[in-house]
Length: 329
Image 1: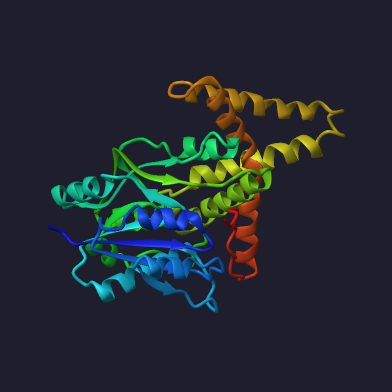
Image 2: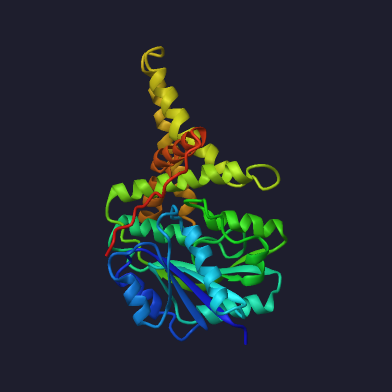
């Protein structure tokens, strides 16, 4: 049997962390929890469950990528025989049967570096923002370009590319997958339940910050791997600039010269939303499809804010800081 390890990262996840760790106890050979300065007893909770705990040095800027790398290295120090490692965020529970499913795929397909499945929101009904996350998680199955924060990876492949990029404040998994694919590894998403996520998003401000973070990730990803043949997140970045900045700026600045006619440019947004809605209706009921289409259109504004923040910090040679939207429990 292959040796399996698991790395969970978190900060002040409270009951979410307990549920996450309990869901994997006895299902893997070694568990490492990486804590990033929790003040809610998360460290004591993890140790009480018999989990190996690594507390990050907070004098060094925190990123999820850095936490995952630290957990991965610690895992191999205490269990060097580990072949596969499951990464999980501290607000996610691993579904029964997932570990076995992922291991089987990696064993049967030696060219695979990463296997992921379906992440679902635990409570999509409690807020429209949770529902939007649940829709976002439902990506196509089969060979993929990227995975999310929950995924099982082959240790050999992860070591070959040097792990995650510590400096990225968002989008670290897709960036890792770019480098894996450049080294002829494959990423696979299978039709299986993987994890239950608890977004705890109830406010518009949280949704806005999450989209700011996404825009920053698009900008940084395109800056790193935007060239041929990858063109990583170039399309997404251009969409941010077009819909989030160019169209509204032209419409407003030209209003005086055109006697207000340029404001008709804002009519393209309902058309864009309808186009997205019509596409989503192929797999979603009417109301969720309409909500997600609206979110896609409105999200261009905070996303271009994230783009601007990235390039502003780059111009000043300033390190970007984490954009957090979650609430502590």
